[in-house]
Length: 435
Image 1 (tube, rainbow, N blue to C red):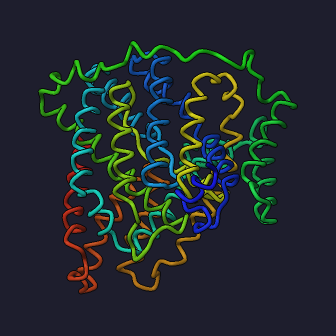
Image 2 (cartoon, one colour; image 1 turned 60 degrees about the vertical axis):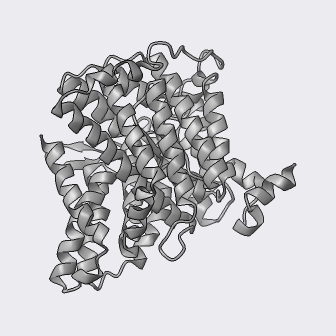
């Protein structure tokens, strides 16, 4: 049985082992388990039942991971996206005063469109049209983005009214981040297998010993009921009957489309999957996240997308679908062991994100920095992702700049027609967001 599994996922060809894949899947899950608690909190602000959202988040994430693992055979995990869930709750529901039931119907319609353009391979066509240099920039930009998230989550960087951001106070739980970062860095430099995971476990244990992380009062609980959100989207599709709501649907579609595209490309670069500037089996990968997004809308959560935290599993050696499948199974187990997951705080995951950011930033060396027509849009992507706190916004800045700089360099004919189309799409995208 084990031999058949190893052959199906080509473990020998990928230079990995079953044990390493399991460790990678566990590492990815630990790195992104926070979404089980963050997503209910964010969507709860819009009036949604937090318990139902917790269950919907776990099930939608698990489905996407399992499909990604079995169909595309990639070590890439899915879950409701950060950023777009905040747009759902704070911009659409609270800002526009749209009921969450209607907003959920908007996600459902966007996911149907998403699935259609995936079936007709439009998403695949667009991703393959992105120039190699910009793909390297996407990978590096995501690295800077998740490192920035790690620095902020760990308290090493904080908001500052005078300088926008500044160095945090080295006190309390911030020292857990420092400990984890130093330990993980040493383990990685010494090339200790599973260094990132070991660092996370050690940081959790230290936090418990020092009283900075509380042990849960119980380790097992039944999954909360889905009833408050299950299939609510279908009952409110008819509510999408105004230009404002059409714009909301298009925004869900655009943000998720380019968040996923950027993340997939970045992770594929990190893992070494790209061949001739193309990602093998990308159709299966896109179908997996599209289906998960559709299922998520029916279960009761904001759009599902591929997760940058998958880079943590890739960093410890994950190279096949077994990594994603392991993560998916753990999301299902997470339904029943939710109190135990509270031990994995942001101070525990922060060092892993920072180190993975370092690993992903290495792709920047492949960008043709000596050619300004390439360097400028690449730089806009690299800087845009962390500073706008959005993968899709960073992509937009770079994709708008690219045709302009290439035309200025008299290389306009080298630009793929799709990149010109995206130029206007992203201008429209920014216009929609400004309304």
